[in-house]
Amino acid sequence: MKAAVIVFPGSNCDRDMAVALKAASGRNPCMVWHGEHSLPKVDMIAVPGGFSYGDYLRAGAMAARSPIMRAVVRAANEGVIVLGVCNGFQILTEAGLLPGALMRNAGLSFVCRDIYLRTETTACPFTSGASSGAIIRIPVAHHEGNYFADRETLHRLTAEDRIAYRYCDAAGDLSEKANPNGSVDGIAGILNERRNVLGMMPHPERLADTALGGADGRSLFDSLIGNLT
Image 1: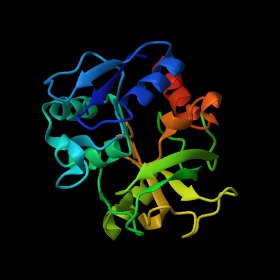
Image 2: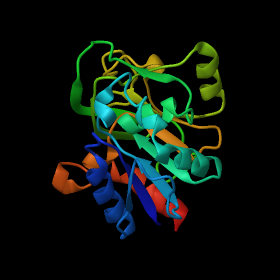
Image 3: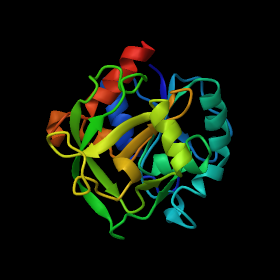
């Protein structure tokens, strides 16, 4: 699998993503600066977490208009797999690749802790190696992770099986207490219509090796490898 990681001013998880991708695939990903106008030929693109452009205006709003994002949108529309994590999820919504918006957390404070996710679908390259309902523990670290979409969009996401992850407790139960940011319907990650683009707020790359205290995030990268090799 050949991958690219997009790097913006303010990215702080680009190298973490690169390490996770190399561990899974055995190949160093291409690190692509935001000012570039084209991408190398790759199987997947990662839009990492961080605080692109200092989160001015809205988180992800300026990054979504970087020159490289035109190439990312073209690649996604051609079927290339795109993974957006945290700020990357915000950028993908601002770029129109995913519906809805990420607002300030319901508690109006930065949230940084391990949380549990319930796998809601396995019908995509990102979760095909997991079992439906599987529970994983990975970290969140964000101030604007409160996912919102109107009822029509939520109905479509549900009907089309495009909700990838929901926040849950250790037993897999959904509750307000298990939701770290107030996201509607406990949504932590969603897919586009073609199912080749995933945006998620939690950070699988931060818990993808036992040396980091857990490897639950590795399942996503292993699923990608299984679909792209």
